[in-house]
Amino acid sequence: MDIGFWVFQTLNALQLSMLLFLLSVGLTVIFGLMHFVNLAHGALYAFGAYVAATVAGGLGYWPGFLLAPVLVAAIGLLLYAGLIRRMRKSGPMAQVLVTFGLIFALLDLTRIIWGDLAFGMELPAVLSGRVTIGSVEYPTYRLFIIALGAGVFGALALILGRTQIGAMIRAGVDNDAMASCLGINVERLFFVVFCIGCALAGLAGAIAAPILSVTPDMGLQILIPTLIVVVIGGLGSLKGAITGSLIYGFVQTFGAVLVPNLASVLIYALLAVVLVMRPAGLFPAKG
Amino acid sequence: MLELQNVNSGYGETQVLHGMNLTAEKGRVLAVLGRNGAGKSTTLKTIMGLLPVRSGTILFDGAQLHGRRPFDVASAGIAYVPETRDIFPSLTVRENLEIAAGRFPPSAGAEAWTLERVLDIFPRLGERMENGGTQLSGGEQQMLAIARALLLNPRLLILDEPTEGLAPIIVKLIHDKLKDLREAGMSMVLVEQNFGFATSLADDVAVVSKGQVVWTGTPGEIRSDTALQHRWLGV
Image (tube, rainbow over all chains, first blue to last red; front, side, top):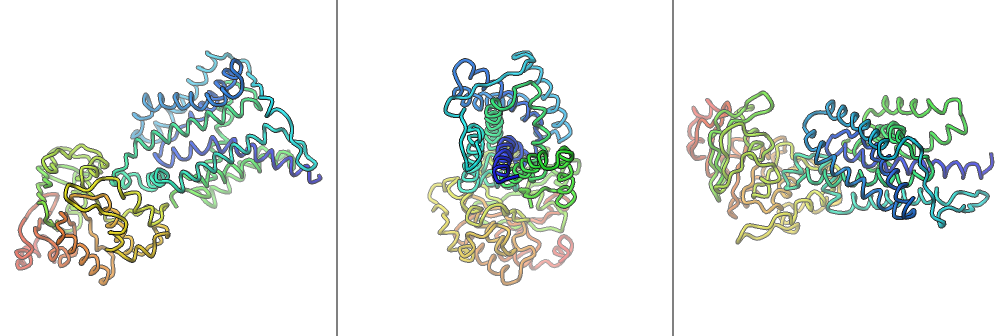
């Protein structure tokens, strides 16, 4: 195992981490801000992948890449107005049941619209080559995913950490009742954050579409890893989402190549350890 | 200015306020006294819209306040300093202040509250601006909670036990600052267990027991009536 192996696997791990980050950050902040469990988050990711692949088939890669987050945010808006707003005060059990049901409704909806066959998505020429890094040749597109994830993380860190609206979101996560007493419309803030979280899920779907095959159940497949990331990282925090994603990405990737026999249980073992040592996760928003 | 008429309210199944009638006048300080569990904090939470009003009316300058959400109540001009202070732990002292600053304009004729003005009142906060909200001492947290409330440019300030758990020297400081605010014409509702503190600041006193007002009068009257103090406050 030379240095090239480590570079290659590290990049693979980073690429998986960034994909999971885009999904988990929306889920964790939505949960932190409003204590709302949206299990249908993975289904929105699948929707994003389908939209991107379909639009890309007609208009090319970039229109698909840009339209997927917008359309998925619009679906999020409909879900919010039609369902989630009414469920806000109905407790976690009802929320889990409804959003769990939503997974299957959305799954069948994608089946009805797009059928059962896997979709592919063509890459634009600029992203389809390979880049040489030292002794390693690595697909440009996967580097693009890493850069995009890092860029989104940087932008979110800046917005959450340095702006007034970011301070309002953190205040809402800390104590929504007090934030409201300071004149902040926490419900509207939640709505905006929810839509952004949905857009990021759509974006994750769009960037995953060219490297994974687009199938109706891709949302279900990603849901468990995303929930693991959220639980390991701790609810409600950006730092938790990025840390949890990196841990998952590296454990999963290196586990699969170094200890293939244990790979499938490794991440669950880690999850169990974290839950025993730090039941609230590594960096929960509420300390 | 603020009027509660026959208000019933409480937590979940438990009713705490039973026909609460309370009036706070403009430019005056109303102290609400009573034993633990009498319904003092519940009254403030009900005013803020944090607890639902089951029946009765709350009027603020004639406008209906009951049934409105906390951020509507805040924008109507009521700022709340809760018993638990509720400083946001994820925010620095500066952010805790900035989140309130400039949100609402001052009422006509009043000078706007700015960061500079609240730091003039509480210079100690100025030295801690980049600290996390919960790295502060209890007294500093109380100062921050009051400063944050002032930055909302309120027409009425409601404070829930601002002296609870504080050292005597800090209690004295908070007392003097609230007295300055009162002199400047700020309307306040002050819930307190500290009898001396409350009666020296108040213009009017209401005594609450079992979710109702059982006595109203002046600080002088209640200070000289030991039987009254003994019966309702256990002083």
